[in-house]
Image (cartoon, rainbow, N blue to C red; front, side):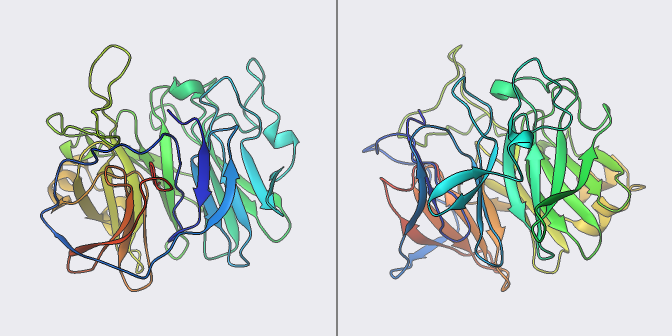
Amino acid sequence: MNLKNIALLAMALVSLAACKKSPNQANTKSENEISTEKNAQLEEAFSDSTYQLTGVAVAKDNRVFVNYPYWLDTHSYSVVEVKDGKPVPYPDAEWNSFKKGEDGQNKFVTVQSVVTDDKGFLWVVDAAGIGLGKVYQHSSKVVKINLANNKIEKIYRFPENVVSEDVYINDIRVDNENGFAYLSNSNTGGIVVLNINTGESRLVLANSSSMKSDPNYHFSPLGTELKKGDGSLLKVNSDGIALTPDNQYLYYKPLTDNRLYRIKTDLLRDFKTNEAVLNKSVEDLGKFITTDGMIFDKKGNLYLGDLEKNSIVKITPDLKMQTIVKDDEKLIWPD
């Protein structure tokens, strides 16, 4: 898999073109699906056939940033800015110079995602899990970069009881209004809640069934069920997350099943809210698609990459879903 990777700017999502199209795509019809939109088109903005990429971020001034996780032996930079179609290490070469055996505290180790916010900052999620393994030397972190001067604004680190060596922080959403960020833990499951003013953090809902992939769902993005090396089905827990435009709800879902959940963020922001209350407050919104990337627009529509149907879909505020664009060659694993 992942022999070629193409970043496509489409509804602020990135598509990883990894394999040839399969004649037998996804197997499960959503209970909420409606019509297909006719006018949406894809435009290639950047391609890289050498290194594997997983994230793209576009700033207000249309600057484009891409990240490459350290999953394979073939790896170069972790975060780049795309300039004239070419990747330039960002914020500088030093932060992108990590090699195994070195201290990873102040270098990017395994960057999983990049996100821009409404205040002119780039947020870099460094899971630090080389090859999707355990956290390397306690070096997982979130790096906040000021896009105005291209300088590191702040580095957020996590205690062992929040991000243990088995936690893989995956995606991030930032609420500057209330001063919080939310990160998904796609390995063991759960949400890391980060107070971006104080640096205090906690891991919540790690044992919630809503964070765990449904063992009965057959995840088949290429027409065939994906399996691990030992023959067992691939299962990935809480992955995609999104904040509503008013920051009142956090939407999330496991990667390898089609259910979608949400929870009120005021409960997450209050560190006194216990797990029992949080668990009871989770809302199951129903069955939609499998995805690991989703984002809201200002009108409250949720856009998601459909991994099993090579498409991008929109879920309206009344939970109706429609396909925005589908392409079996360009939208393989749309994130």
